[in-house]
Image (tube, rainbow, N blue to C red):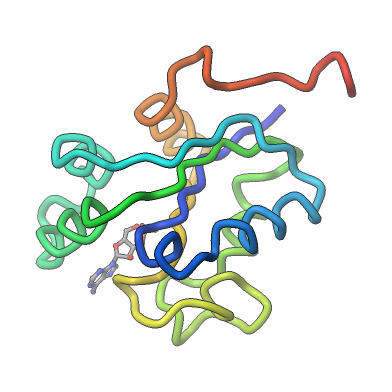
Length: 143
Ligand code: CMP
C-alpha cells in the first residue's frame, strides 16, 4: 500500500492543531502507520530540506523547523501521496483553497502548518529519514 510522510510543523504543534490535522486524514480513510512528537536536529533539518540548500530562504527554513517540536507521521492508503497534497493545499497559504489544511490554518509561506512528501521518491526518502522500520506498523491482517 502507498505510504507518505506528513509532518505538523512547529507552528501547527504550538497552535494545538495536531488533533485537527490527524482527524482530517483519519476521516478521509487513511491509516496512520507511524507517528512521533520529536525535535528536529540541525543535521536532520539540513538533510530533509537538502533540495532547497541553494534557496535564499534555506537558513530561515532550517531555523524554523528546528525551533520547536514537530509531529512526524507516516500515512498509508490508495494514492495517499497526491491526495494528501491536495488536502494540504498550496504551499503558500494565501493561495491555498478553503477546506485545505493550509487554506484553513496557514498564515505565511514559511509558517504553513504542515509538510507532505511531493512524490513517491520523496516519500520513501523522508520516511526513512524520520522513521526506523520497526516504527512503521502494518494493518495487513485487518484489511
Ligand atoms: P515544505 O512543504 O515544508 O517544503 C519546503 C518549504 O519551504 C515549504 O514547505 C515552505 O514552508 C518553505 N518556503 C517556500 N518558499 C519560501 C519562502 N519564500 N520563504 C520561506 N519559506 C519558504
